[in-house]
Image (cartoon, rainbow over all chains, first blue to last red; front, side, top):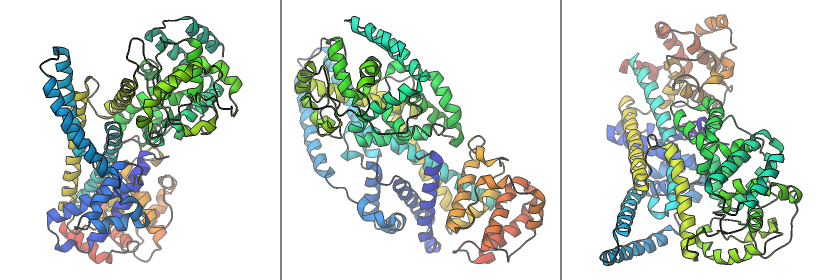
Length: 184
Length: 434
């Protein structure tokens, strides 16, 4: 039973955990490094707040744990014991390869047929290509999206959007609070 | 019950029931549902059974979604998610349901409210249908009944999509029969296995559709056996005048799934109501996701700039202080500005972190103003829990002009709880940075 506010609490809790790691080394960081650390810890916290139930969160955590730059630290700290369970992207790579082959072949087929198909079908194939192109873009946006098929992609996108929103809310209020405190 | 009784013959006699009529029937049925809670429970149980046997991941996901929407509908919980396969016909019934959901859901939502409300519009209809639903033990598989009814009702004209979509309509028709068969009767295997125990492998198994169609004919006394769980076929009926080979059926199922999900996205992404094409919708979604990601980047940059040492513990302690608008009554946090939300949960976070008193917002309203006036002057050597309560009370009373003195107190207060905090020293450093 996750209400949005509890999601945000969860996120905030984990995020603070992550930030505590880098606060010790904060003096040596440049602003861009700090920003990266903040963003990374926020992303990992958000993903872990999902408890591995969504594919994008697992993909995000997995990619972060391969990263050199604090990523692993964050993952370990924030996830604790769940670390191992969540950092596996297993069979998705095979699927990706098969899909790539399929896509290549379908492209050529359409081209060959173009001469013989009536306008209606041409329009629909053009529409399909448009959709496909955009689907590809969306896949590149959602973490781990390239491994998913369309149906689950849309589900993951939904969840991802919700999580992003919660993340933004928390970050914004934290930033505003900090700013306000600094300014007065 | 009466209504449903009349629905059944209605549906039975229309060999060629149009979509519109079905929609109307559904709507009527739905409205009946609103007034008849006990039947809703049954319905919901069946529905749940079926849904549960489908993609569990999907179920879980949708339940989360709907939970996000309807905080007021606690009892729906898991069930709501499983109900959600909105049929466009349900649009008619939704606006009023949406209104019901919206105020209840208003509590937790700052800026996300309107979007959540939008979601609630689409998903509230089935949950409204089953408001009491708590039990998730489906005894009956709706699919079985669906098939049975469709067999009885006849045939070609009835478009049977996936069972989860159709159940809302079929349920009305099946009500009569269902009531008799309802309670946990594990009926034995008719090999038809109409029960679409749609698991996660739906898509891969949709080529068994032909098989299923044959079975449907024989399924007059369908077994809703819950033990028929192992079959994960999707039972799809061909529409009138459409190709019936398994590939196109599978394709159709897939397309419908996608369009359903797209509808959710339409509600989630602002400004998508007018766009009808898939490509346009995807465009909007892409733009929205990109903008959200950019916002995250921007905010993290801002946080990095504002806070050179990344010591956010300080912020948390001051957060309550920093919010200019504090509601007098925290329980209604969702109602006022966005800021109150973080106040509440930051507050809770602090108590979490310190493992001190659980200072929920509810405590705040109770504390005596005069007491607080006294406590404000207390400086360092106070126990952490007390100071926590004190500091949390402050936002209610203090206008911004008092902040200086309060800051002193806060710095003293803050020096205790935080482990990373190097006492007042760091606090004063912060002050100097301003």
